[in-house]
Image (cartoon, rainbow, N blue to C red; front, top):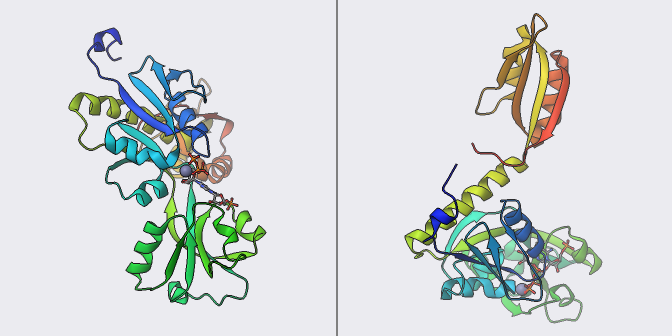
Length: 295
Ligand code: PRT
Ligand code: ZN
């Protein structure tokens, strides 16, 4: 195990900006908590400090996070990739955290004959993401007028200030409720960790420690740990079914001709693996959640 915290005495504190309240806040804090980092977060305060890990929190509006990181008010931040890209600020995206996934899509009213981006030629498109939209239109050689609104993008067609919109979509319910059809996804987003590229080495080391913990938590999230008894002669088949980078752990059982086998399995393949193992004669299958793991 590593040094005690006292031994790290000179370690600098990494400050991280997270959304104060909104779609990212809870999951951002949950992720850090699951890294074994304790803190007391009160949504009314601007700052908080972790215990047992050199980390400070800054609770702010998500739009402000890239700027705060760029200014050095915070060293790193958790923000939607869309907000980061839209800010036009150049920082380092150090991790895709894979939560709060959404897409930026073109949506049109019923009856709009949409084929591809060129269908938007000469049209007015309302969006809160003019920079991202502008880049995509330019890449595709489409000339359209961008109408910038900061909220309620979905009502702009109805009220007559736009012909189409480019807005974030997750379930698609908002579009439907406003009589719009999702025509094309032009950009994908999820929460990312951004950081200043010019951080001091000592601080970078703290960030690296945090990222290692985050990776371990994220990796474990999509895995199950499976343990079962198997007739000895089926071991090769079972190993093939389980797949993965590492061979399974095998322990002989007291019963002649039987083995106990254990391995991590990808969650999305879990039921297929389960059924094939049953067919091979596996018994006493035990499945567990994995809290943390490394490759
Ligand atoms: O107050 P603050 O400025 O901090 O928050 P905010 O209101 O600007 O942001 P918030 O909390 O709404 O979203 C933060 C981030 O969550 C966004 O920047 C995205 O990266 C991500 N995210 C994920 C989403 C959605 N999903 C999402 N569905 N952000 C917004 N939406 C909105 C969308 O704009 C539309 O109005 O939800 C509606 C569509 O949802 P569906 O499910 O009906 O399709
Ligand atoms: Zn915002």
